[in-house]
Image (cartoon, rainbow, N blue to C red; front, side):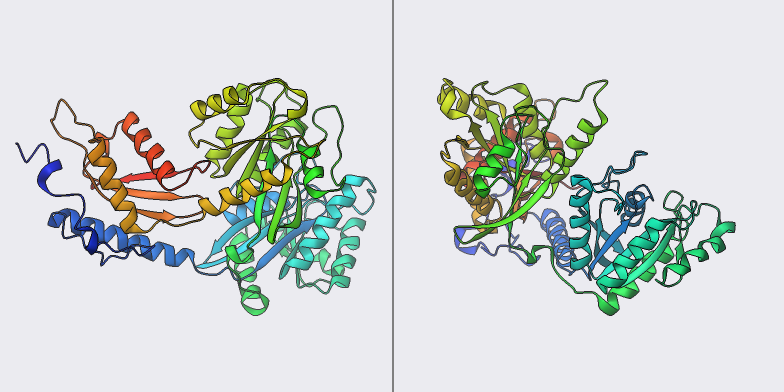
Length: 495
């Protein structure tokens, strides 16, 4: 055998089983003696970097910062600028942001959370405005620091005075930010906002980035003084989002789960436009239920409100641990349902399928289950349900909790490599017919939980084929109970 072209048989994949380290996280001193020296050194260095990165991720956030203001003063643009993201929705129409969004931000090595809120209009007494006001009040109460954003171009307004009065009575720590000061020559004009009684305003331009670094310096300084450090996983609640096409009964299911009519239900599709988070307890577990707007296929001429409903639904999936994909059993599984499931997988959200309206359908459950198993990579479990009859509502919740627990478990490194070796022996990796080189699985470890992400070190990832990749994914999902979970497999090889 030509050792330069086929290295598969040069050494075993693993040392003897008794030598394996079964620690959850692999440290760089794990025995790699079964590998040749170059591979062992390379993988050891990779594992050391991985451990350092995870220790960095374990650092606490130094606090939370709420960003509030009148509609259309540029709050979401400012949040995106400060966080270096495009997560917050930005649109010329006032009032696009309705529900709170928590966005991670890092500055000078310190991490904190920015909370983007809907615009507060004290003169608007609509139900939506009142809901936004409640969200803003909650954000003020939960955050260590509040940034009151005002429009530096329009000047001071009665609405600004109303918000300033609200903040003064809340006893919150507030910094005043005059946005849209695009020309540095006009920064002195922002001083007129001093009359709000919240200190000297900080002139910035979220659009151009002027003075945003100075604002971040002030935020970090304030949080060092008054911030409450926390970790992302301090809240042990399981976030469950209800997703699906419009008019499949998402709000009806939410009402059945919560036991009361907290969500508007109507026969016309599209009743729900915003994600509404509701916390409750179920069988000793803390649950946050997210009822979302229906997802449609994107089309030309689409109502802008439908578009933003879809965006909010996908953002709800971003912050959810498990998505209950509700499918109208009377219509069967459609391509749109599969597209929603794929969207959840792409956002690292676990999926369980709930067949709604089961009491009024004649669809064959086996056919539906087979279709889902064939079409969806995450292999989600299917539960029949009827919200109007309260059928299997508790079973659906229990299955969602069970799925969350499976997705957040960690597989020991030794166990993972034993399974990897077994899979390799059962179905040998592919051989490149031109070069006569065979893919070699050198080592593997789980690098993240919730959802699970694993890393497999190989001799040359260019030798991996699509079919063998699917084989490994399906087998690992089955062996470790990751059905319904978006299993991310990262293949690494030396440059």
